[in-house]
Image 1 (cartoon, rainbow, N blue to C red):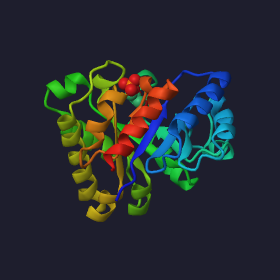
Image 2: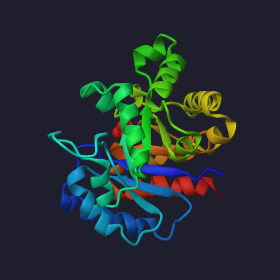
Image 3: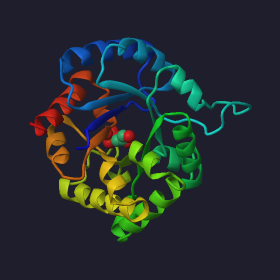
Image 4: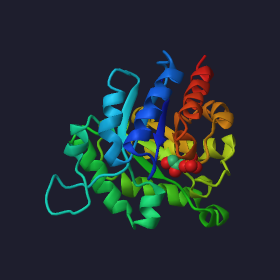
Length: 256
Ligand code: 13P
Protein backbone atom coordinates (compact mmCIF):
# COMPACT_ATOMS: atom_id res chain seq x y z
CA UNK A 1 0.00 0.00 0.00
CA UNK A 2 1.28 3.43 -0.93
CA UNK A 3 0.83 5.93 1.90
CA UNK A 4 -0.98 9.00 0.63
CA UNK A 5 1.14 12.15 0.71
CA UNK A 6 -0.34 15.66 0.75
CA UNK A 7 2.10 18.54 0.38
CA UNK A 8 1.64 22.28 0.88
CA UNK A 9 3.66 24.22 -1.68
CA UNK A 10 3.55 27.74 -0.33
CA UNK A 11 5.49 29.16 -3.29
CA UNK A 12 6.61 32.78 -2.58
CA UNK A 13 4.18 33.30 0.29
CA UNK A 14 4.35 33.30 4.10
CA UNK A 15 6.67 35.23 6.40
CA UNK A 16 8.21 33.68 9.51
CA UNK A 17 5.38 35.10 11.64
CA UNK A 18 2.71 33.77 9.29
CA UNK A 19 4.44 30.38 9.30
CA UNK A 20 4.25 30.25 13.08
CA UNK A 21 0.52 31.07 13.08
CA UNK A 22 -0.19 28.61 10.26
CA UNK A 23 1.60 25.74 11.99
CA UNK A 24 -0.14 26.13 15.33
CA UNK A 25 -3.60 26.37 13.75
CA UNK A 26 -2.89 23.54 11.30
CA UNK A 27 -1.69 21.15 14.01
CA UNK A 28 -4.76 21.89 16.10
CA UNK A 29 -7.07 21.23 13.14
CA UNK A 30 -5.19 18.08 12.15
CA UNK A 31 -5.68 16.58 15.60
CA UNK A 32 -4.37 13.03 15.85
CA UNK A 33 -4.73 12.16 12.15
CA UNK A 34 -1.75 9.93 11.18
CA UNK A 35 -2.90 7.95 8.13
CA UNK A 36 -1.80 10.58 5.62
CA UNK A 37 1.76 11.84 5.31
CA UNK A 38 1.84 15.65 5.23
CA UNK A 39 4.68 17.75 3.86
CA UNK A 40 4.92 21.49 4.45
CA UNK A 41 7.04 23.26 1.84
CA UNK A 42 7.72 26.85 2.95
CA UNK A 43 9.99 29.40 1.29
CA UNK A 44 13.63 28.86 2.40
CA UNK A 45 13.57 31.68 4.96
CA UNK A 46 10.66 30.15 6.89
CA UNK A 47 11.83 26.52 6.92
CA UNK A 48 13.66 26.78 10.26
CA UNK A 49 10.58 28.24 11.95
CA UNK A 50 8.34 25.54 10.45
CA UNK A 51 10.83 22.92 11.60
CA UNK A 52 10.70 24.24 15.16
CA UNK A 53 6.89 24.36 15.13
CA UNK A 54 6.43 20.87 13.64
CA UNK A 55 9.14 19.08 15.63
CA UNK A 56 6.72 16.87 17.58
CA UNK A 57 4.28 16.18 14.72
CA UNK A 58 5.34 12.77 13.49
CA UNK A 59 3.22 12.59 10.34
CA UNK A 60 4.17 16.11 9.21
CA UNK A 61 7.47 16.51 7.37
CA UNK A 62 9.25 19.43 5.81
CA UNK A 63 10.29 20.14 2.27
CA UNK A 64 11.98 22.87 0.25
CA UNK A 65 10.87 24.33 -3.08
CA UNK A 66 14.17 24.00 -4.94
CA UNK A 67 17.90 23.42 -4.44
CA UNK A 68 21.16 23.43 -6.37
CA UNK A 69 22.90 20.21 -7.36
CA UNK A 70 26.41 21.25 -6.26
CA UNK A 71 27.61 20.69 -2.70
CA UNK A 72 28.79 24.27 -2.06
CA UNK A 73 30.66 27.11 -3.71
CA UNK A 74 30.17 30.24 -5.81
CA UNK A 75 26.47 29.89 -6.71
CA UNK A 76 24.94 33.15 -5.51
CA UNK A 77 21.30 32.82 -4.54
CA UNK A 78 21.30 29.04 -4.33
CA UNK A 79 21.04 26.52 -1.45
CA UNK A 80 22.47 23.02 -1.23
CA UNK A 81 21.01 19.68 -0.20
CA UNK A 82 23.17 19.68 2.95
CA UNK A 83 21.72 23.06 3.96
CA UNK A 84 18.21 21.65 3.59
CA UNK A 85 19.12 18.61 5.69
CA UNK A 86 20.49 21.01 8.27
CA UNK A 87 17.00 22.49 8.79
CA UNK A 88 15.46 18.99 8.87
CA UNK A 89 13.95 18.84 5.39
CA UNK A 90 13.01 15.35 4.23
CA UNK A 91 11.72 16.39 0.81
CA UNK A 92 12.59 18.83 -1.96
CA UNK A 93 10.27 19.87 -4.78
CA UNK A 94 12.16 19.84 -8.08
CA UNK A 95 11.25 20.98 -11.57
CA UNK A 96 8.00 22.72 -10.64
CA UNK A 97 6.43 24.19 -13.80
CA UNK A 98 7.07 27.70 -12.44
CA UNK A 99 10.78 26.83 -12.19
CA UNK A 100 10.70 25.39 -15.68
CA UNK A 101 8.81 28.22 -17.39
CA UNK A 102 9.81 31.34 -15.42
CA UNK A 103 13.37 30.33 -14.53
CA UNK A 104 14.23 28.21 -17.54
CA UNK A 105 14.92 24.91 -15.78
CA UNK A 106 15.46 22.05 -18.18
CA UNK A 107 14.95 18.33 -17.68
CA UNK A 108 18.75 18.07 -17.56
CA UNK A 109 18.98 20.51 -14.63
CA UNK A 110 16.08 18.80 -12.85
CA UNK A 111 17.88 15.49 -13.35
CA UNK A 112 21.11 16.77 -11.75
CA UNK A 113 19.10 18.04 -8.80
CA UNK A 114 17.18 14.77 -8.48
CA UNK A 115 20.40 12.76 -8.36
CA UNK A 116 21.93 15.20 -5.87
CA UNK A 117 18.85 14.99 -3.64
CA UNK A 118 19.15 11.19 -3.46
CA UNK A 119 22.89 11.41 -2.84
CA UNK A 120 22.06 13.52 0.22
CA UNK A 121 19.18 11.43 1.57
CA UNK A 122 16.54 13.97 0.51
CA UNK A 123 13.44 12.65 -1.24
CA UNK A 124 12.68 14.57 -4.42
CA UNK A 125 9.15 15.49 -5.43
CA UNK A 126 9.70 15.73 -9.17
CA UNK A 127 7.08 17.77 -11.03
CA UNK A 128 5.94 17.06 -14.56
CA UNK A 129 2.92 18.11 -16.61
CA UNK A 130 1.74 19.44 -19.94
CA UNK A 131 0.58 22.90 -21.00
CA UNK A 132 -2.89 23.53 -22.42
CA UNK A 133 -1.48 23.83 -25.96
CA UNK A 134 0.22 20.46 -25.54
CA UNK A 135 -3.01 18.86 -24.27
CA UNK A 136 -5.03 20.37 -27.09
CA UNK A 137 -2.40 19.13 -29.55
CA UNK A 138 -2.72 15.55 -28.28
CA UNK A 139 0.81 15.61 -26.84
CA UNK A 140 0.15 14.74 -23.19
CA UNK A 141 1.79 11.30 -23.29
CA UNK A 142 4.73 12.48 -25.37
CA UNK A 143 5.44 15.39 -23.00
CA UNK A 144 5.15 13.22 -19.88
CA UNK A 145 7.35 10.52 -21.40
CA UNK A 146 10.07 13.07 -22.27
CA UNK A 147 9.94 14.71 -18.83
CA UNK A 148 10.07 11.34 -17.04
CA UNK A 149 13.02 10.04 -19.09
CA UNK A 150 14.85 13.38 -18.83
CA UNK A 151 14.24 14.32 -15.21
CA UNK A 152 14.68 10.84 -13.73
CA UNK A 153 17.55 9.56 -15.87
CA UNK A 154 20.11 7.42 -14.07
CA UNK A 155 18.05 6.70 -10.95
CA UNK A 156 18.27 3.20 -9.51
CA UNK A 157 14.99 1.35 -8.93
CA UNK A 158 15.46 1.96 -5.20
CA UNK A 159 15.92 5.68 -5.71
CA UNK A 160 12.85 5.76 -7.92
CA UNK A 161 10.78 4.09 -5.19
CA UNK A 162 11.83 6.80 -2.76
CA UNK A 163 10.97 9.59 -5.17
CA UNK A 164 7.57 11.22 -5.44
CA UNK A 165 6.26 12.29 -8.84
CA UNK A 166 3.88 15.24 -8.98
CA UNK A 167 1.66 15.38 -12.05
CA UNK A 168 0.71 19.03 -12.40
CA UNK A 169 -1.00 19.94 -15.66
CA UNK A 170 0.13 23.54 -16.17
CA UNK A 171 -3.37 24.63 -17.24
CA UNK A 172 -4.76 23.58 -13.85
CA UNK A 173 -2.23 25.45 -11.70
CA UNK A 174 -3.69 28.51 -9.98
CA UNK A 175 -6.52 28.68 -12.52
CA UNK A 176 -9.35 27.14 -10.52
CA UNK A 177 -9.65 24.67 -13.39
CA UNK A 178 -8.99 21.23 -11.91
CA UNK A 179 -8.34 18.20 -14.08
CA UNK A 180 -11.33 15.87 -13.81
CA UNK A 181 -10.62 12.82 -11.65
CA UNK A 182 -10.65 10.74 -14.85
CA UNK A 183 -8.22 13.03 -16.69
CA UNK A 184 -5.88 12.93 -13.70
CA UNK A 185 -6.22 9.15 -13.28
CA UNK A 186 -5.47 8.60 -16.99
CA UNK A 187 -2.30 10.67 -16.76
CA UNK A 188 -1.22 8.96 -13.53
CA UNK A 189 -1.79 5.50 -15.03
CA UNK A 190 0.30 6.50 -18.04
CA UNK A 191 3.08 7.81 -15.77
CA UNK A 192 3.11 4.56 -13.76
CA UNK A 193 3.18 2.47 -16.94
CA UNK A 194 6.12 4.51 -18.24
CA UNK A 195 7.97 4.07 -14.93
CA UNK A 196 7.27 0.32 -15.12
CA UNK A 197 8.66 0.17 -18.68
CA UNK A 198 11.93 1.72 -17.50
CA UNK A 199 12.39 0.51 -13.89
CA UNK A 200 10.11 -2.53 -13.71
CA UNK A 201 6.62 -3.04 -12.30
CA UNK A 202 7.57 -3.61 -8.62
CA UNK A 203 9.37 -0.25 -8.41
CA UNK A 204 6.63 1.55 -10.35
CA UNK A 205 4.01 0.12 -7.97
CA UNK A 206 5.80 1.67 -5.00
CA UNK A 207 6.22 5.21 -6.38
CA UNK A 208 3.76 7.75 -5.09
CA UNK A 209 2.28 10.02 -7.75
CA UNK A 210 0.68 13.25 -6.53
CA UNK A 211 -1.81 15.34 -8.45
CA UNK A 212 -1.42 19.13 -8.38
CA UNK A 213 -3.57 21.89 -9.84
CA UNK A 214 -6.41 23.69 -8.05
CA UNK A 215 -6.85 21.02 -5.36
CA UNK A 216 -9.33 22.25 -2.72
CA UNK A 217 -11.20 20.73 0.23
CA UNK A 218 -14.24 20.22 -2.03
CA UNK A 219 -12.48 18.19 -4.74
CA UNK A 220 -9.78 16.39 -2.74
CA UNK A 221 -11.74 13.26 -1.82
CA UNK A 222 -12.81 12.43 -5.37
CA UNK A 223 -9.31 12.96 -6.77
CA UNK A 224 -7.71 10.96 -3.96
CA UNK A 225 -10.10 8.04 -4.56
CA UNK A 226 -8.56 7.31 -7.97
CA UNK A 227 -6.40 4.17 -7.95
CA UNK A 228 -3.20 5.80 -9.21
CA UNK A 229 -3.50 9.12 -7.36
CA UNK A 230 -1.43 8.85 -4.19
CA UNK A 231 -1.65 12.38 -2.89
CA UNK A 232 -1.71 16.05 -3.80
CA UNK A 233 0.65 18.96 -4.22
CA UNK A 234 -1.44 21.91 -3.13
CA UNK A 235 -0.66 25.55 -3.90
CA UNK A 236 -3.22 28.28 -3.18
CA UNK A 237 -5.43 26.19 -0.90
CA UNK A 238 -2.43 25.28 1.29
CA UNK A 239 -1.98 28.84 2.54
CA UNK A 240 -5.03 28.64 4.78
CA UNK A 241 -4.43 26.22 7.67
CA UNK A 242 -8.05 25.14 8.18
CA UNK A 243 -8.66 24.51 4.50
CA UNK A 244 -5.39 22.63 4.15
CA UNK A 245 -6.20 20.49 7.19
CA UNK A 246 -9.58 19.77 5.61
CA UNK A 247 -7.85 18.50 2.46
CA UNK A 248 -5.76 16.14 4.61
CA UNK A 249 -8.77 14.99 6.66
CA UNK A 250 -10.91 14.47 3.55
CA UNK A 251 -8.10 12.33 2.12
CA UNK A 252 -7.93 10.31 5.34
CA UNK A 253 -11.68 9.65 5.08
CA UNK A 254 -11.20 8.10 1.64
CA UNK A 255 -8.90 5.58 3.32
CA UNK A 256 -11.72 4.56 5.64
P1 13P B 1 -2.65 25.57 -7.08
O1 13P B 1 -3.10 24.56 -6.06
O2 13P B 1 -2.65 26.97 -6.58
O3 13P B 1 -3.34 25.39 -8.39
O4 13P B 1 -1.09 25.25 -7.37
C1 13P B 1 -0.70 23.97 -7.68
C2 13P B 1 0.77 23.90 -7.61
O5 13P B 1 1.47 24.45 -8.44
C3 13P B 1 1.37 23.16 -6.48
O6 13P B 1 2.72 22.97 -6.68
